[in-house]
Length: 284
Ligand code: PMP
Image (cartoon, rainbow, N blue to C red):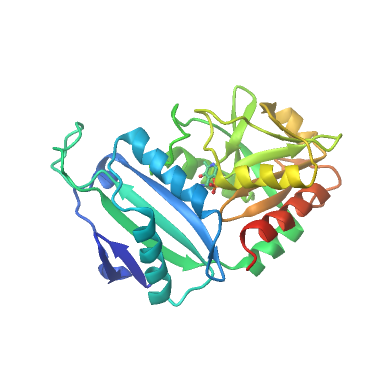
């Protein structure tokens, strides 16, 4: 929990930072969010996160509450107030406050922008990556537009909770036997020939910003990438598996359900990509 939060144009102590009970985010999940990582004051993949935020707003027809330069200034201020240089920043925009009605509120209703920040422990993340993590498969029961980063995350919450209760770090979401992505990250496998495989972009996955940068890192390392659907069985039989997100970077997977991936160690391709990603986005 951050000590200072940004809400409705003001920095407030987190415990006093509130929005109205008729905020449409609260009543309808009518809003979008972004999470980006800042390492030693450097914004990781900020262009991508800002562009996706604009896209999410456009798709939901919510007017952008702030321009890029102002947003960056507010984030800097938020980090300063919280005495953070390496952090996760959460940005949320809802359609605003209005008497409860499914229809959009009258035009001119201002969107509500909320931001919080918390410490990001890169060493802890690296230690987790060196060990590798487990995934538990779960049915992907989400709606048809998960390419929009909305705050409507109940299916993701239920999947991640079920995965945690099964002793796994993340849920691997499966629809019609195909792996779409994870509850809060994109899923990848490496086949026996060393080719990276990840679900293509479209309405059934969130186009991860880390996913895009990982594709760019793979190109630089001359690693072949195939954006195509793969099944849960394929994932379990893969040479390697990993997931990507702004908060996990590239995270090697060593087990899916009760099946050990390859030799049960973080894969060399995943570890190379993790280092390449870090060098590209978070080094000074
Ligand atoms: N898929 C889902 C469902 C997510 O919530 C996230 C994290 N926001 C991602 C993928 C990864 O996206 P990014 O790399 O932009 O963090």
